[in-house]
Every structure is written in structure tokens, then in C-alpha cells.
Length: 108
Image 1 (cartoon, rainbow, N blue to C red):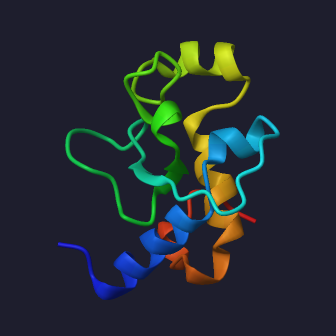
Image 2: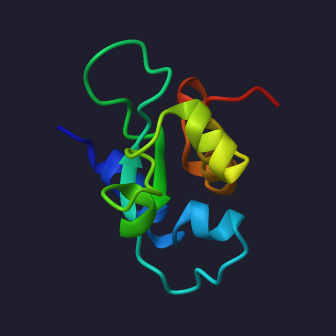
């Protein structure tokens, strides 16, 4: 069960618009996105932390052939030129003041 702080954070994530579309240079202003939980490198089964989430549109989430769930990490990188972790780092850096230090996936 997500805490109130985690729910607020995921709401902020969704309001960012699709991270993939943004990286591809598309306008994401006003775009509401789905909150995708990190799937690669999480260390086993289950859902990753609510702070390890990425905003993605339906097309870039799943069932389109270009979704984060549709490809393996290497295939995804070859197709787009970035990885899920790159999107997660972008998201956490954008919302840095809301990400607990122990949940950050990068060291700066």
C-alpha cells in the first residue's frame, strides 16, 4: 500500500508527461501519463519502489510494439538509444526535492 507521500510523488510523475515522448522531442505539455514502475534491475519479482517510477504514455508503455514492456532492455536501447534507467534518472532529477535520498538511483 502506497503512503500519502508516495501517492503525491506518483501524481507528480504522471503530470510530467511521457518521458519517452519528451526524449524524442515531442511536446508533452499538459499530457497526463501512466506511472510505470521500474522493471529492469529491481532484483527479483514484485513491483519496484513507488519512487522508482517513470511517466509514459499508453503507446510507450505496452502493447504497441514500442512500449517499455514490449521489448528487452537491449532491444529497447537499440530502438530508442536510451534505457529505462536513463528515463528513471531523468524523472528523479526533475522531481529531486521529492525523492528520498535512499530511493535515488544515481549519485551526484
